[in-house]
Length: 276
Image (cartoon, rainbow, N blue to C red):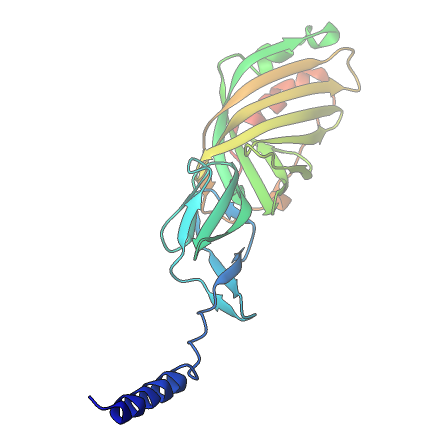
């Protein structure tokens, strides 16, 4: 091989190498720098489902909808989530729903709570009744709230988020409307007052809903009367209290007055007759 040929080949090789070094490498694909989980509400009702979504912010400043992330929950007994981000309320409480996209995690805390909205029909069974002073003379407990007796009840509830409002109707005795918060475990301590002059029924309802469409709980009532000394107390448990399809309202309930102790018989009759 001649020297002239070697020089020519070397120049060509140098020219080729120099041309190759002028081409720029492809820029790296943008990666996720943050992920935001979103939903229409931070609350999910017991037994209901909602589709959650997520948006990723990329390293180039753009955003994309997350469609291939890995979803999870830190409390599957409270809230369950499938591979597409659909969350189902399993029990009252709080849970954190997360999704991982390109190695970046996004999370949101939600609360699962019961749905008390609507009209409920059921019964309560008297567990105990005690009376003091002049309430003993007409045998209030034996006449009105005998132990073991089952009476009808109606709840008319309106729910706004974690606030429960409504009235309770014992037979045909309607209480005032009251409002109470729904606790994290789904329970509600709802006070109410029913006035049947001269008697006043101060009620305390302890309610919960662990099964969709069914309320459990207890009732405590303090009964006073402006014409009698002393008082009576009654404690009961709810049984067979289920959501109803009727659209009844408490506005049609008519109360009758108790004007003397002998009218406790009339009260007992009112409590026995279901309201409709």
